[in-house]
Image (cartoon, rainbow, N blue to C red; front, side, top):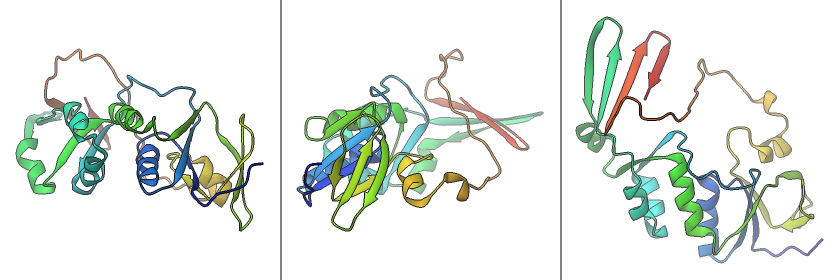
Length: 213
């Protein structure tokens, strides 16, 4: 196993947080490696809308990606609340959002991930199609084995691998020890724009239920 240098950092997860952290680590003299279990970046998938407000915009602007993020914004201007047996309520986001945050951009997660990867791929080592198997902090660094790649050592390992984090499980134990039902489920999927919506979100609200397009 190659020796550890104090600048080698392993980041697990190539979503939003991983590439963003890797960019700033590289900017400050570190050598980040981002590992991602999927074989290729999932381009073209929308996923959930992500709201970037003041501090988040402050983070990505120096990265030089803000113009691309603004160009890929969802352009949602109106939310129409549909209620069973009652008139709909129109919410003008152009008036509401300035009261919440001075700077705000809504973008689909898939678009944001693609933009962040493109901005970092030439300066950051990416390893796709692999995952961390074991983590051993021996006080002089972290020895890491992988599902496929050869073992390596790092000064630091960061878990940016989402809700069911492999890093969190390996360090703190099985997820079931910490999991707690919060009272609801969220499902997100992409469909064709069969309603012809433009700059408008339809939201159906009923007791215990909510659906938005």
